[in-house]
Amino acid sequence: MLTALVAASALVATPAFATDGNLPGGTSIAVTITGPADGAAVAPGPVTVTGTASVGTGAPVADTSLIYVLDASSSTANNGAPSCGNILQCEIAAGLALNAQAQSGTIGDVGLVAFGVTAATADVQPAPGDQLLTGPSTDGNANGVRDIEEVVSSTFINGVATFTNKNVGGGQTNFADAIAKARVVAQASTRARKIVVFMSDGFAVGGGSITVPLAGIPDDIDIYTFAVGSGADCANAGPNNEGSLEQITAATVPGGHCVQVTDVGSLPAILPGVIASSLDTLSLQVDGGSFTPIGNAAITPDLPQNGPVNVSYSVNTPALGVGTHRLCVRADGADGGGPGSVADCHTVVVNGPGGAFALEATGLVKIARTPEAVCPPGATKTQVPVNLPLVTTGVLNASCTAAGGTTTARSSVDGATLLGGAVQLSAITSTCTGSSSGNTRSSQVVGTINGTPISAGPATIGIAGVATIHLNESTTGPGGRLVQNAVRVEVLGLLGIVTQQIVLGSCYLG
Image (cartoon, rainbow, N blue to C red; front, side, top):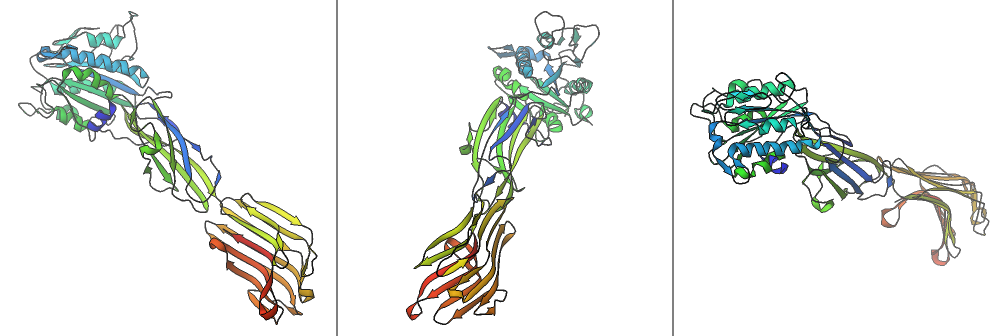
């Protein structure tokens, strides 16, 4: 029901952002991300975000006042509908239905105005004096009937009888005085929002222009108007341009419109929608960008839904690159106080893959990568020296860590001798670092080749007929993997064909 009314009378309010909270009218609204966990490390690429959202299932805040305005002019004695009686009786039935809805807990107090030639505020409590407001469920005289419902039910042609008799006359329809009296009741309330439901079966006749009581009306008062029956017209401004029902709503509800109710019997079903709640949309935000609607293919059940309701969702983000990302899901809803939103946000970290190894040999002599540390999950490994005909080494080390969106892979060799002593190395290291700000690779080799000290920086040195030695080599491996080799030796056989490869101190990203 609320969906139709919101389409007719859109309300404007400043959304509040939180994991859970309340809509402007006090209805609870919540959204939760259940996965991935806040701070979770995830793989590069799309990430599936799952969770729940709800409206009207938590504790409400009774921060809205509700004022019924009933047309009690003589014409409301005309036939209304078999289900509820004449027009006034159907207005009364609608008011009672709305008050039943008000028991949900968002309405803090209620009041009533009846109008005809003039308008009157109703006395809504049995205590002495003229009381403008009462609770929607209050039964001050303990007779088993809510006080406001006694008052609404006592409305008669030309007046209201309970708890104090008020006569408003029936020969004319005075919109201006009805608005003025509704303002009096609304401004007696301390609630944050004041909702006025204004029903009439005709158009303004007498009473002067509605612009007078509407002048300076506070922003917290919203007047929803209903043109009831075939004789009513939202747009009719009266014989002397007193003002229309449409103009009343337009002046108090930004973007709002009068609701034409030709089928009088439907009024009791329509009116409660004024304070009903709805969960309207869910949307996803990545890294502070715009919120993108989550389609119903990812939501169960489909939105919009009237409250109370719970839904679940499962939606994929665009592909996420290496780094830290903030994911937010927002739930948008509305109640009698207007639209509002809540959002839940989680941070996830994408650590790029990487790894490092200290020694590898391929060809006639095969040595698997020794030791090798890989991210994910990450490790630190150390292996004892190697003593083989082609290569002897000191202690071999490799590590890989991934945290906070940064992957760091390192390898080192505590000295090595290759090619029967032609290559003497005292220190070998390589480091690869990948993050959202970019990738870096570096290596260092300290030693001699045939007695000549090795210079810093990349170099390729040949030993004729024996080997080609690549130092501080940055290269690309399969699938675009970025590789840094501190030392790569190609051993030559007959006709200069490479028969053996030895790699010392390597790291990679990707």
